[in-house]
Length: 468
Image (tube, rainbow, N blue to C red):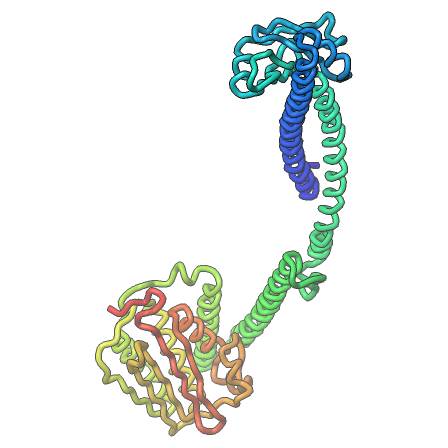
């Protein structure tokens, strides 16, 4: 039961409300008690002053303390109060009929205070007593008026009973209401839970219902929908990757198996075996390149940042080495390769192997798509705190519709021609990934018939890559 958020919210709400009600009840109770006692003292003091004034007037007529007291108490009746007239020493002179057997004694200290301050209040034998001098200028005695404290206690007792009955009732009603409010508030979450349970790898296109996109639950549902969209895109990309990788691996494997079957079908001459082995070697090299590219791409989302080697890389030396390696390919195809590497020393912190692979992939791509007699240039310069590497060719170029996708895995502008050239559509995808993990960016400028220009900017002082 306590595993339910709705139940826990209701209990927390009831607990906080219960403590608040108890604190409020105590505050009201003690405030009411103070007011009741204050009102009682004021009432007793007012009654005592009335008795004192009447006694002084009657004394002027009767000229007798006892006679005046009897007349005053006979004329003034106070059913809920005990009235007494005493002399300066506290000895009773006259008293009301309801005090015939309950004459109380006033402490001398209270009499002194009453004489000095014209009033005094004290509690005696369960009675609240007000003492007022009979006359302010003549020392006749005191008028005493008392009332049982039980009068106040009865009112406070009734107030306590009301609190004992009312607080649990209010808490019960509020808890029931809080439970239904929590149930109603959490209903969208329960609905999202049911909808999410129905979503599987085969139904990632489903989305959660968003009732109000501006509140917290609506924003949560929107966030989950965005997550589902990213998962669907990643899952679809993974499926396409597996399908494309399987397709790319199938061709060289089929050639290897077919050529091996043909070679073993019957006895052949040494030249025929030489030709078969040469073809098998070419396909094995192609298969090795594809597998190596797949391995590099597999590092991208998982361990690439952790395994990226950080070392001092001299881009001048790296560009020179890459140009020397690509010169062999360019000469074999009849393409001219030039290098512009006359800038001052440019160093950065990075993975030398990956940077070399990036430059070689760009040069290999340029050689593949530049016809014989064409030109390729490789340039390294420093621009605005970045190392800029530019690979320019006079090849077939890329249409504008294809420029946005040439960096996608297994995407080839001319699929038939790319396959004939031994390409698997992974080179530029690897280039973009290498550039991004080094905090750089790559741009392409190309048009059909006028060649392509790939520009790579690598920051020398950004994202932890410090120029050495």
